[in-house]
Amino acid sequence: MLAARMYGANDLRVEEIPVPEVGDGEVLIKIKAAAVCGTDVRMLSFGASGIDESNPRVLGHEFAGIIDKVGKNVKGYKVGDRVAVAPNFGCGICSQCIKGNGHLCADYRATGINTDGGFAEYCLIPEDAVRGGNICLLQDDVSFEEGAINEPLSCVYNGFEHASVHPGDVVLVVGAGPIGIMHCNLALMAGAVVCLNDVSVERLENAKKIFPKLNIVSGNPEETVMKLSGNAGADVVITACPVPSVQVQALELAGIGGRVIFFGGIPAGKEPVGINTNLIHYKQLIVSGTTRASLSQYRKTLDFVSKKVLDVKPLITNYFTLSEIDKAFDYAKRGVGYKNVIKL
Image 1 (tube, rainbow, N blue to C red):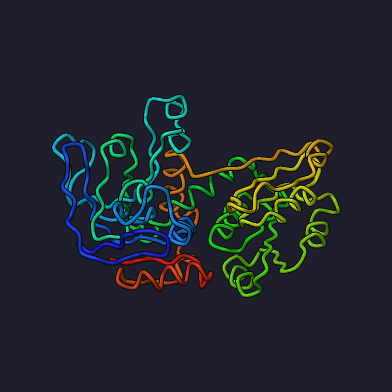
Image 2 (cartoon, rainbow, N blue to C red):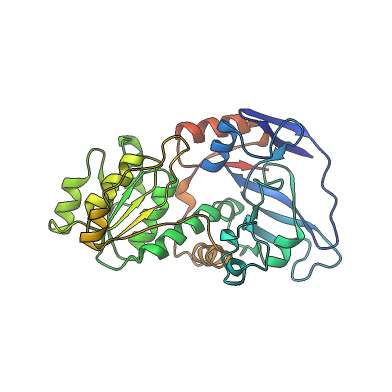
């Protein structure tokens, strides 16, 4: 089969490798769509632990396809099923896994990060992930592309739940990439007044075309936030970008009793971030961070998509073949469009 394997930093090779053999408890998926994520870009740009010339990895953790083979001990799935796959799976026995938070397991693994992923014609789903329920059936009217980008949507939903967005809340989202747009989508769905901030005027204008109700601002968002909130400050601030100064300002723009979600992680070398903790204290702010998503959240957002509660199709802006994956990574790295999808 054809696969895109990472051998180290800035070393991604499209090559022929054997189709994986299917064990008794495993499932083989014929990939139909796989999306490039910021995590993929960071891994390729800076390297990743455990991946080198002797241990290459097929990247890609946002994907969907058709079940091609099932092991003899697998129950609940059959050949021909249309599916999307939640990539994170835990050990299954620790306290976090028992709570349903396998994505927070100290020994969690992820398809496309620790095991071979979806930038290939076929992907083998390990037994732990099969038994854990990571394979999710797609409704017939949900495209494979929509199924693939449900993974980042579920991560955004994790942040949304932590933010406790209510109707009428003033929500500031900083970062107009695909993640920021998804945050806006959920906040608007909840009935919030949403302000989207980014340095890119083009991205802001494109976001406004998708969601006309958005308030967009390319400079300092303080004036807009105060106008929308009657000088009270934002009820919710979400940092959907990896910028330390944005995290600092988030506390300043949040109103009394506000909720701040640090969604975009800070790159190594730019941490720690110096913040004024008195703002947290005297404003009684709730400051949180979220990472990845639980299987329950993954299935919940997939249900949103299938029921047409959310429309993620406008976020799929560029399509590529597997042989064009270098171009897809370049687009993702430069922020061209939103989601870049490999179609197989």
